[in-house]
Length: 120
Image (cartoon, rainbow, N blue to C red):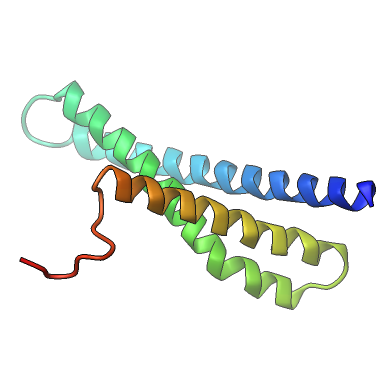
C-alpha cells in the first residue's frame, strides 16, 4: 500500500517537473527571439518594458505547456504500454492540476474573464 502511494507521488512530482522543465526550455527559446526583436527595433531599449515582456512570456509558456499536456498526455498514454503509461497518465494529471491553478490565478488577478463573454 505504501509502495503504491510512494510510486503515485513520485510519478506526480516527476510529471510536474517535466512540465516545468519543458516550459523553461520553451521560455529560453522565446527569450532569444524576444531579445533579437528588441535589439533590431528602432529606438532605445526600455529595460522596464523588456523585463515586463520577459515575465509575461514566462507565465504564458508555463500556461501553454500545462494546457498542452492535457492534449498530449492522454494521446501518449494511449499509444504506450507498461510502466511508461503511468508516467503519461500522471503527466496529464499534473497538467490538469497546474491548469486549474493557472486559471484560478488568472481569474483572481482579473487576467481573463472566464464567465463574462461580451457583457457590457
